[in-house]
Length: 342
Image (cartoon, rainbow, N blue to C red):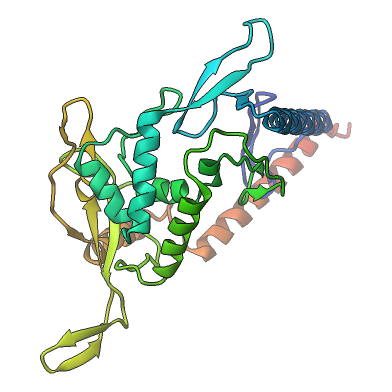
């Protein structure tokens, strides 16, 4: 990397290897030893985490077998309360009980799903009436009830008391371990209601009123509402090729129309502190127009700043010059070390 013109900084050893400078053998050995120690530590940590998870699964199976709803961690579903029943000096054990108020809301969500309401409509109804979001372990959500969270709730088999351990790799999607512990959690939703809600969702599959986003949003996580500071959500209203009605007949749309909207205003997120809607900004910003304007500005910036987007030929010449300079410096150093003839 240094030979290619990259300066490398290693945080663990607090060393900097400058571009085009020779790396001493001792520094190479030091870096290799540090990397191997880090690999071994990571492997040992992974083994400890797997062993701890296996212990939790075994404990869950044993407690469920005798009809006890006991957990060794406070991380439980949002509709469940925990109370520590073990001594401070012993391994943590928590008794799980249903939170009646949250269970009532949970059953309402399932009933709305059975009645034909989609998760966007349910989110708006909950936010519209100021239903408090389920905060867990004192972590507060600023987005109100969201479609993603409601979808997870309706699909989560933990509402029936089931515990499904998951493999959670550092990268990639989590996968099931293929183990199901029944009656681990207190049951909040009976299997009949769960099956009806699942069937209702399946019957509406593919009939959603909103188009799914099929392209990247360059402003994702960047665009904020000027009124409340909340995130701006992109929604597609017309997709290119979609058949549209006109007085002269139906025709395919020539382009995609999407808009950035304030998430808080769109979903009627309730401000629990002030007891008012968090935002009333109903303005829509055309995404395609905004994206084109931003890209035009960015391209001008790239053209002006040659150091940002250098021509490949100029970059190759710079590397060649730097390489020749290294060669000249090396010859000069060797010449200075060579004794002059008497």
